[in-house]
Image (cartoon, rainbow, N blue to C red):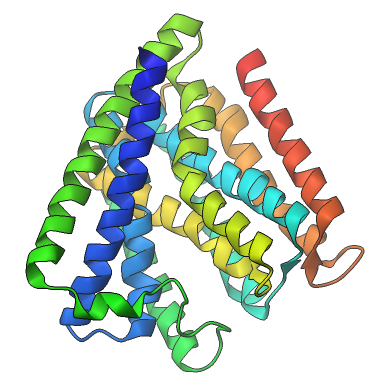
Length: 317
């Protein structure tokens, strides 16, 4: 039953996230927000909703390892699985914003998370508030760079213009459906993960950094693979790692403000977070050696292999 709970939970999270994105974008059009602002802020927040609901639910239920494992595992999966598989299908283009803005921000937040967790074995409300503040600063700089032409995609393509004419009744209905699906999905996923961990004799952390993390990364994986298969345009590496920034700053930040996140498994600090930082750090040499400004098929195979190694070691340990 635990596997069934996890599968149903993941399906509900994907559906809930989709309806929340639609309703949020439609509502933003009603508020006369620009397409650029909607894409850079509203869509980004809405697509992080599944991770947020899972982390908050787990923290409130006392399973803080799932809260941390969900985010750390998702960040690893976004690079090792999503980025790796996408690169195998079609080369990833390195844009200027990747190494001048997005990558430094991702590395700073990743290292900051390690420092904060290792000093007190907890992410408290104040530290969560700091992450939220850093996110607001990041969004401000992101919008300013977009307006100044510093970002290649000032008008993100994920914003559907047809949502501008959606009725108020439909917006409310989508919000309700999205909210209920996210809540129900997170409940089933957390409960299923705890039951599965007990059955397999592994910790909740292992299930969180592997199965839950992959599940919450499915939307990014599907979107990236479809775009790669269509070969309509080069996929930007800078856009893909934006979700990692949101995972740390918004998901963990908001969760910690609601319920402080304690480190219960020492492997989180001695193993998992170093894998996350390592996957982030290795992007720079991969981006420039041997061929500059591109991550192609061979580099993608290396990244996916490293991810498979991480998952294997998580279960073996």
